[in-house]
Image 1 (cartoon, helix red, strand yellow):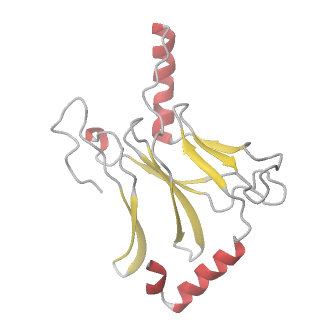
Image 2: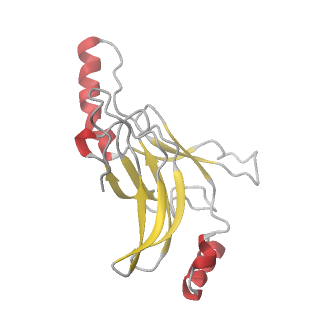
Image 3: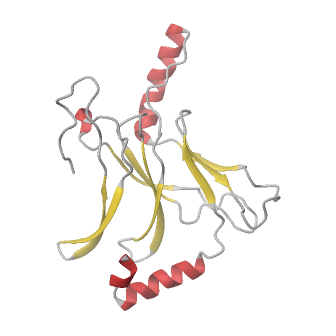
Length: 193
């Protein structure tokens, strides 16, 4: 368990974060072929609550957004729905310490069979627990990356996260793999960082 390896000061930070977020409203996160990562309200302590099942917010990852115009134009030209890029990976969640020392929660989602990128969002405080409304601005995009660039295959693997020290500073590293490029089986067999 990573928690047992923390120094006392970091344990206190995580403990305080856990207590402060004990009443945080749970959201169900899923990616879909409409190009978005969706967050649905899920109040398990009151299953008959009127807001259960409502969409709280949705986010289009940058690499997906970059292909939406081409998909639209192809659909218009052929008369057939064309969808080539969409997030399809199962989102992962992680509590982590920011460079500022603040604890936050990140959602990590890969494109799965819909592309070759990985996107990370800060989802710490996106919904107000008392009003069930979007708090502030919704999710905060942290970064998106396409491991291997144009030579990347589909990002089917669920990204993992390693807490490590680089140059004496604690950092979190996302480990994400992409498969073999469908159009060229010699591509997608490299490690990129």
